[in-house]
Every structure is written in C-alpha cells, then in structure tokens.
Length: 386
Image 1 (cartoon, helix red, strand yellow):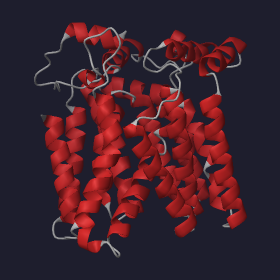
Image 2 (image 1 turned 90 degrees about the horizontal axis):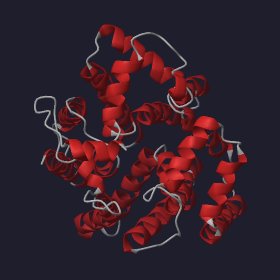
Image 3 (image 1 turned 180 degrees about the vertical axis):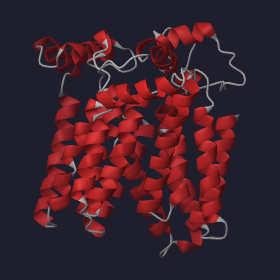
Image 4 (image 1 turned 45 degrees about the vertical axis):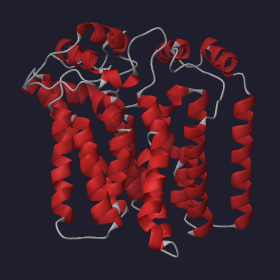
C-alpha cells in the first residue's frame, strides 16, 4: 500500500505541475515528496534481498577501521568502508546509517532532476516506477556511486571539469562500475556532424546485431575462465552467470521490451538529430545500448542504472514538448499513453516469478516492513539472502 500511495502522489503531481502547467505550491510539494521518499527508505526494516546482509555486515565488520575486510575486501570500496566505520563509531544502530544513505541518494536524484529539467515530477514518477525500490532497498553501495555520478554528469555538462572528476572519483570510491562514466566526456567534445551521427547509429545497429548473434553463455564462460577478472570479481561474475534470473540468455523481444526499445530509440534520435544535443543524446545512446545488452545479460542493468536518470529527463522533455505542439488538443492523452507504454516492462518485471520458487521479484520489497513493525517472513528472508 505504501508504494501505491507514493506512486499515486507522484502521478498526481506530475499531471498537475508538468502536464497541466500549474506552479502554485510546486516546490513545497517537491520537498514534501522528497521527505516522504527519504522516510520510506530510512524507516524500512530488512526490505530488499541485500538488506539483511548489509545490516549484519554493519554490526560485524565495522567496529574498527580496516580497509581489508578479508573476503569482502575486493568487493567493498574504501568510500563504503570509511562511511560505515564512522557511522558505526556514532552508533551501532543500522537505522542511522540507512537514513544517511536514504537522504543522500534521494537528494542526489531529486536535485539532479531539478537542475536538468522543469518537468521534475514526471521524472520522479519514472524513478518511482523503475528504480526507487532497488536504489533504496538493494544496491546500497552502487546507489551511492550513482548519486555521485549524477553530480558528475551535471558538472561535466556545465564545463566544471575539476568538480566533475572529483565526483566521479567519489563514485568510484563506492563502486568499481562507476568507471563507465569515463565514456561520457567523449560526447562532450564531439562536434555535431551528420556523417558522425550516421556513423554512430550504424555502429550502434551493428552492436545490437552482433549481440543478438553471440552465444552469451560461451562468451561469459570464456571470460570467467580467463582469470583476467581477478578473484573477487570472477566469483561475483560466476555467481551471476549461474543465476536463473541474471545469467546470460537468448535475446527475446516481447511487447513490453519492444515498446521500451522503440521509445528509447525515438527519444535518443530526437535529442541527437532534432535538438543537436550530442551530450544528452550520447548519454541516451549509452543507455540504449546498455538496455539492449541487459536483455541478453540481465545483470547489465547495474551498469545501465548510471544513465537511467538522464534518460528520464530526456524522455519527459520529449513527450511533453511534442504533445504541446500541434498535438496539444490531445496532449493529456499522449502523455498518459507514453507513460503507460514505458511502464509495461518494469511492471512486468516486478511480477516475474523465480523458477521453482513461490516468490516473485516484488516479494523482496513487499510487504513493506518498518522499524516500527519489524515482522519479517524469515523463510522469504533466507531465500532472497541466498
């Protein structure tokens, strides 16, 4: 119920302020919604498949400062270890740490939308539909990195390169995958030229074609067996490769995925070709390629998430600006149609049932348990922890 309330509130505010154009009380509601998102995240109790492990680790591993945590040393970056240690010196109650996480991540996301677009609430709605649950209840280390990456993207756009790379370094201090951000400057300095644009799209199509043709199982097995990944990353990669949900699979395009891909292609094309914005369009192109790769290697959604918020900004601008032109008489219908179409695949994923299990993907987040009612299903907790 708490997620439905959040989503309905987001939809109401997006409709009122972004679609209908009202302004009175807009920023008051912005801060109310931000506080609500922080509190839902901060007051959780063992919501998400990773949370029990994070809580146990916080109690067990951070009572003294150690940058080498044994088996965890290759997975936990210095930023995460230092933050956990200093929070642990203040209190051993995980709620304190979780509130710091909830505040940082949601402020980073909300402020990014406020900096980059006037359609703030529509972006927040997309965030609520697709990534709020995983950012706040699962990938805690990476969500810190994503938060820092959002500042990196904004400062890089504004030519504040020193600040930008400080934030990229901070992101890397929480998760290795943040190095994907080094690709973004390429689009910052790339000049608009139709030949270059055509070449980029041709290369992208070739990438998708070869991806579909590749034997992903064999490719991943070869990469893992090569030894180039290092022991800790190799262990993680092997775990994901053997997972029934996250392991490599043949690329199948159903209705939900097809709608998602076509909408993404349209948005990216609009920004690059129509608006001649190679920076935003380039980030959108990376998002598109990661999205398609995600279909073949599901765990790649962890890389795609660095670009999700940027795409939501682009998506919101395109559907509202297009519907405000010649189609303004049916503007409300068009915006509602695109929101529904884009939401098809994420909602389908929430109800994905794990093979041989009574649990669905959404079951790790539902029912919502708070510190005021810490009544969890221990069988479910053990299943998702394993």
